[in-house]
Structures are given as C-alpha cells and as structure tokens.
Amino acid sequence: MNKNKVMDFFSALGRSLLMPIAALAACGIVLGLSSALMKAQVVEALPFLQLPVLQFVILTLNKVAGVVFTLIPVLFSISIAFGLAKEEKEIAAFAGFIGYYTFLVASSCMIGSGFMDFSALKISAILGVETLDMGAVAGIISGLVTAKIHNKYHKVQFPVAISFYGGKRFVAIAVIMAMAAAGLIAPLVWKPISAAIDGLGGLISATGLAGVFTYGFLERLLIPTGLHHVLNGLFRTTSLGGVYEGVEGCLNIFLQFIDKVDINELAPFTVFLGQGKMPMMMFGLSGAALAIYRTSPEEKKGKVKALMIAGVAASVVSGITEPLEFSFMFIAPALFVFHAVMGGLSFMLMAALHVIIGNTGGGLIDYLIWGVFQPGSNWYWVLVVGPVFFVVYYRVFKWYLTKKKLSIDVADEEETDGKQGVSMDEQQKAKAVKIIEGLGGFGNIGVVNNCLTRLRVDIKDMALVDEDILKKTGAMGFVRSSDTHIQVIYGPKVERIASDVREVLKY
Image 1 (cartoon, rainbow, N blue to C red):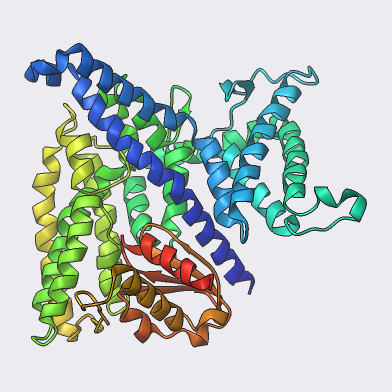
Image 2 (cartoon, helix red, strand yellow; image 1 turned 135 degrees about the vertical axis):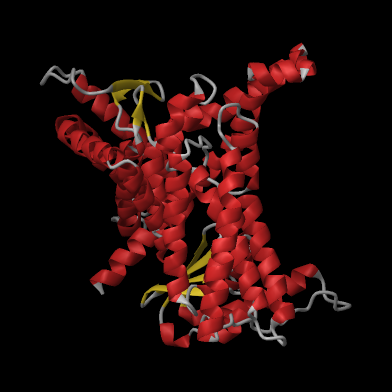
C-alpha cells in the first residue's frame, strides 16, 4: 500500500508540474519566433522587418513571452496545489499563491533580522520582495505544503461563534501560518541544501556524454509510469539542469538568454532539451510505425494504418509520442527497452555533434523555430542522423515483430460519426458514458484528471475496469500505477474526453 501511495503521489506531482511546463513551452514558441525575427542576419535578409510597427509588435511579443519564465516558482506553487488537491481545486490554487508569497515575505524578514550573516545566500527581488532566491524549489515546497493542508482541513468545522473561519476559509489561514514558519526557517537551512543540489548538477555535467545518454534513456524509460514529467521538470527548472549567470534550470537558461548571448554559450544546457528527442521522435518512431504496419495481418492493416498515421503525425509535428509508444509497449517490452536506449543515443549524438536546439518539444514546430530559424544551431545534423534512426528502427521493429509473430491489437471502435440525427454533443456524451462504463461505472470512479495524453482516474476497485470497453472508445494503452489509480492513454484529444467524463459524472 505504501508503494502504491508513493507511486500515486509522484504520478500526480508529475502531472501537476506538466501544467506550467506546457505553458512555458507554448510561450517559448512565441519567444523563439520573435527572437529569430530580431536576429541581425534575419533582418538583413528580410528588410521589411525594419518597419517601426513590425519592430514594436515583435519586441512586445518577445518581452511578454519572456516574462513568463521569471514566474516559474509561483506557477509551480499554484499548479502543484491545484493538481494535488482532491476537491475544490480552485481554493487550493488560490492558497498556493498566498502560501508562496507568505514564504517570500517571511524569508525576507529573517534575512533582514540581523540574527545571522546571510550574505552568502542568493538574494533577489521576487514579486516585489527582496528575499531568498530558491528558484523553483520554493514553489514546489509551497505547492506541496498547501496541497497537504488543503486536503486535510478544507472541510474542518468550528463552533458556531467562529464557524465563518472553518472549511475552505481555514485553508488560507493554515497555509499562511505554515508557510510563514517555512519562510523563517528557509534562510537557515538553504545553503547546505543548495550546495548539495548544485553538486549533483555538477556531477551530472562532469559525466559528459554518458550523463546525457543516461538522461535520455531514463526520460523514455519512465514514460509508462508518467514519472518522466518529474525528471524533466527538475532538470528544466532547478540547478540539476545547470546554472548560468544565476539562472537555474536548462529550460530557464535557454529561454532567458537565447536573444542575449551567443548561441554557443547555451550548448551545455540544450543537451537536456528538445534537440535530443528530434532524431527519435521525427524519424525513429516513424520507422517503427512503418514496420508495425507492414508486419500486421492483412485483416488488420486498414485499422493499423489509420492508427499509425495519427501517431506519426502527433510525434513528428508536436513531439507527442505516447500514442505510438503505447501501441507496442506492452505487446513487445523488449522493443520499448530498445526505444529507450535509442532515446539515450539520440540525446547523446545531438550533444556530441554540438546541436543547439532548445525548448521542450522534439517535433517539427520546435525544430523549425529553435533550429532552422536560429543561426548557429547546427540544425542540419538532425537531418543527417534522423534517416539513420528511421532505418534502424524500421529494421529492428520489423525483425522482432516478424520473429515473434506479434501484431498490435486494434479494437473495433464504436463510432457514431456521420449518423443522421446524432449531434456532436450527443456523440461525445455517449462516448463519455462508455468510458465511465469501462472504468467500472459511476460508483467506481473517484477523481478524474488528465495530462497531455492520459486520462488519469482514481478508482475504488481495479477489478471492475474493462479494458476491452475502453479500447472501443479509442484508448491506446493503460498504466495501472497502483491498485486505485489507472492512466488511460487517448493521445492529444484527452483534454476534451476528460472534460466530457467529468461533465457526465456530475449527473
């Protein structure tokens, strides 16, 4: 049971970290495009960009997108509190912001108290407060504490005389007290903790290409558990991913300095970013998909083709790989291990070839904006290495699937598209009802959440879950992270599915 709770916690934490990271990735695209359009080489090639109005628009977009990256700690605090709260999530999110700000002010009070010499600590102006700068760690701590307090006290009741301060109102009061205490303690204990984190980051950096390979290998291997979001989040926003001029985290560093320093200065940090995924996502998995299609029985080929085309499109364009990965992950675990090894090689080769392409995605959009449009990124190496990955994936997958006589299982979906008299809303509602049935019915379902590709559901009895029914609704795979939590992989369309399921569950 303890193992189940730990897995559930880290799975939920990973999902919570994904919310701000996804927002940063979107803002990163705007920042990257605007930064590219401000480069002297691009302006020289496109003289119309010198028009004052265009320069004003581009500069405004660049500044607005860039400011988001200074807000990562508070975004983490809010999103973790929201993501880990079991009920009344909006109250937890509100308390998450209050808790983080209280932490900043309390730390500022301790630093200004004169009780000790805090000159060795990093002090910065954060949200208007001169205080201890713990980066994303402060936001993570605040979010975790807030979620814990919220889940425990959001229904607490007091005597009539003070009943107004009970329930969700008490959450904010308790969070303020707890985070004030944490803020007062933080300056006293942060120095050795910070040194330990920096040391671990230095160790990872010192291992060179071996460290990059290990990161890429684990980043893929953790996909079934959903814990890759935790790994990514820590490298992208804390000193594990590097420190440059006081800024921590490889993603933070890249996006804050891409238009301020020579691109070669950022090479040590992009090794953990999107560039490492591109040969594998844009080319390797496409080769795997072709092999899966060609080794499928004739009677399955039509449905497998449709599934593979959708999966390849998601992987190549936006870097969403789970629809493809879950198609073979469970029927051929050896191929998934091979895929993880190739993921490590993909990261390592891009680093060895001095490719400098940042942001979080490994798809065509990031490749164009952060690679092709950025002078000095050495983007052409992706086109050199990529076709080799395509061939290797294709040959290995075809050989293994043929030898083992394996083919992916494609369920018959119960579609109502195109039926006269059936509106889109009715189709979506019917699908949501079917999903609820597959999850064991209304009484078996607790909390319903989602990330980019997965429907994440807390359930009471795993034995009641019917995977065959869920496959007929378009589910591509399942992860049972504990006895009471299941992740159903639907791909990029999952957000609408989760919304429909929650809507049906209300009635």
